[in-house]
Length: 93
Image 1 (cartoon, rainbow, N blue to C red):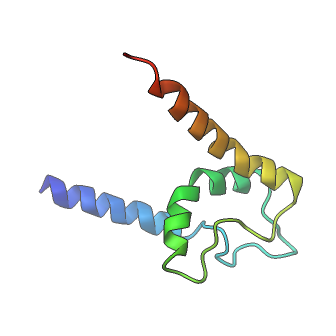
Image 2 (cartoon, rainbow, N blue to C red):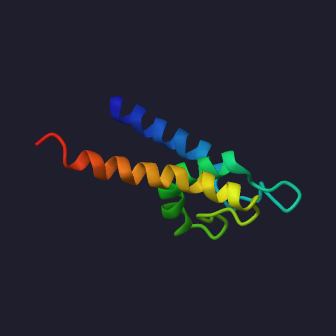
Image 3 (cartoon, rainbow, N blue to C red):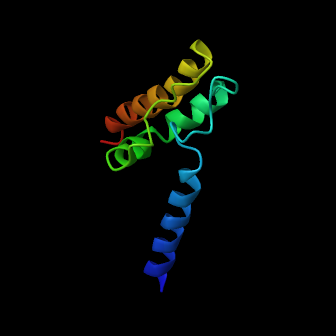
């Protein structure tokens, strides 16, 4: 029963992410992705990368964006995730 609940929760999370991945057609030149969308897309970048292997509609990076602000928002989760993982690796010995 517990395994079924975990699988259902994982499917629910995946379905929720399906509506907010880069390249899903939600953003265009009239409504480009901004800083906060960049933060979200950077946060789910690993999931989006794997998903993009199986779908032509999903991209790792939203091409319709506000430029520098989107880039900054996209990079913050990537850099903080990698630096936290690297800095914790050497502790606790």
